[in-house]
Amino acid sequence: MNITCIICSDLILPTSDIYTTPCGHIFHYACLIQWLERAQSCPQCRRKTTEKSVHRVYLNVNNAEDDTDPATLQYKIDGLQFQLTLKDKDVQNYSAKYQKAKGQLLALRTEVQELESKARTHDSIVNALKDQITYFKEKAKEKEKLSEAYMKLKNTVKKYESVERAISGTREAVTEMIKNESDIESLALLAATLKKTLIDVEERKLNAEHRIKQMQTELTKYKRDNASLRSQVQELRNNEERRALEDKEENATKKVNSPDKSLIFQSVDDTSIDSPSVVIKHVEDILKSTSPYLSLKSSGFNLDMVSSSKLRSNVNQKSIFKKPLAAMPQRPKADDLVYNGLGGHSREEVFPRPSMVSLKRRRCEPSSTLVKSRRLAPNKK
Image 1 (cartoon, helix red, strand yellow):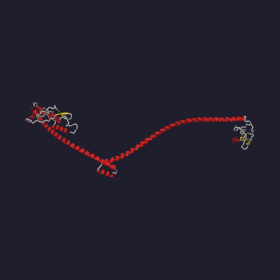
Image 2 (image 1 turned 120 degrees about the vertical axis):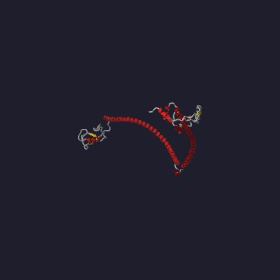
Image 3 (image 1 turned 90 degrees about the vertical axis):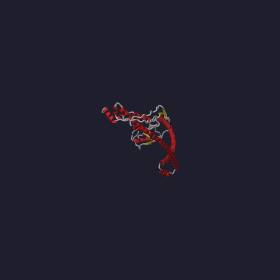
Image 4 (image 1 turned 135 degrees about the vertical axis):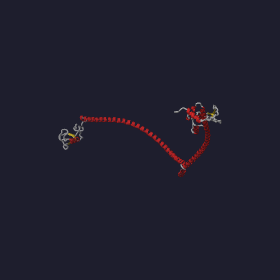
């Protein structure tokens, strides 16, 4: 006998808790109680029913019943199909989970590869950092050595500064420094430096004395040369003044005896020459000059000849106030060259000597000559 509960659609077995309503319909107790909690009526005929009005039913079932009952078999088939459906759903769910897990596995493998690559990169970075740490440790050791060397050099510099102060300072300062100094090494260095400085100063003193002696010798030589040159200049000055006076006298005599009387009234300014004293002063300035470009001693020409030639060119100008020149001895030809010992040559210097021939002066009446010349001279505007 196949009895089903219309609430849950399951078979009502003899071992189940079976209850009936006042209208006679039977249900599972659990299903009926849940139904009555929602509605106070029969689930099948909708008759009013309460929990107090239901009664339990006890069924007696024959144990020799055939198991091949179609309803039972159908019930079992339905149950198995339902379980199979549930299993299929579970398989689908597990397949989806498997695919998802497979995707996650691939992603995790990719991530693992990336992490392994990062780990290798980090390992290389760690190795590089270790190398840098080793390098910096070596640099730190070098820095410590340099710091020690710097401190030593600093102490040495302080010592040399004290030595320099001792060298450049006064005697009182050096004495005070020696009293305050307690380091034996610094005192030894100071003493050695002062001794060396003293030796150097003595050597410089000897060299300076030697140079002073040399300069005094040269000064004596220069003074002697200067005195000689001054005597020559004075002699030149006397000779040139005498020549100028003789030229003026000679020109005046020639113009007085000239047939052209208008020459007498030529202006004194027009016939004047450069004063011999000016030329001689120029020669003295050249001789006294300290310029390295006017080295007269190593010159290849005679300054006296140059100055005398300039004076002669100026003396040749005619003037009525000049005296006639005395007959000068003819100089020898300077074709023969003389080597001066400095890689060049110069002509032999021949100092001019005036002759002692006396000249007769003509007497003339300047008053009558001037009156005649004023009459004959043309009027100047």
